[in-house]
Length: 301
Image 1 (tube, rainbow, N blue to C red):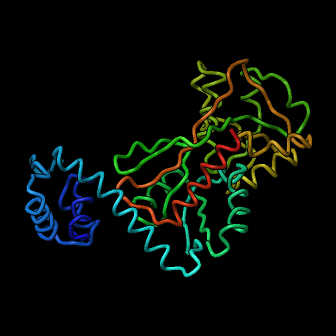
Image 2 (cartoon, rainbow, N blue to C red):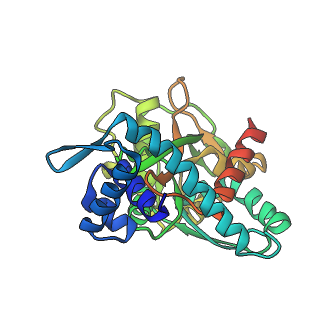
Image 3 (cartoon, rainbow, N blue to C red):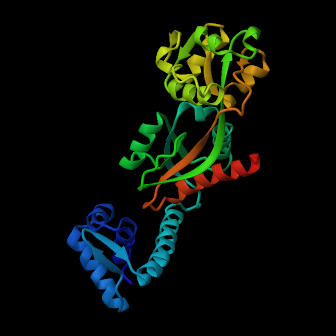
């Protein structure tokens, strides 16, 4: 069985569109059609049913797809292994995520793991918004990403990785009391990229009926371009802000900042996802990094 024909079939089966499959497989559309026709002739069975511009995989096609996934994955792993005489994982793995994810324990653990087991592996990390992470993934600029929203994109596979809790914190012990609605309106907030989204999560959990209290009409006393700078400003008692709890836990333990509690309710939380392209066979080095994250999560659980 011709590997190129199998690759052409694999992309066509996943995308259900010969034009898109041709782009992914670096072939012409007629080339895709010829390879699939050759496969159908060799196997003596129909692999696709055409429905307008789309194609649908037949039962025989589904069986071949399962084989193709394993075959192409094995070939990719073999080539990666043979490319290095000592079978070490090498090369660059690029991924993106919101800045808040940088404070989770998983990232420093990955760097330590890379240093011990994969010294030839280069980690290229980009701190961007959720939207930019998804756009970079779709454009092929990164291998995978972390997001704090489910992209709900048909081309993206999003798997729940962890959950983060959002809290309002201030730099004085007086902040450590239960807030009323009027208290929130009088607070001086520090704004930073992503703050508006976190505030909405926090407000909906503590003051769900107070819809007029929005990020646009808060009292702001400062605006910075990173979550790190915002935490520093709160530490110096220059204002309050909302962060994922894991970002400020150590600072809270040192009594540099304190939680400002709202109404007695369940804390606002949100999921963190690992996102990859559905139709892409990941190189071994990328799979190793993602698997390392999942193993860390298992250790933390």
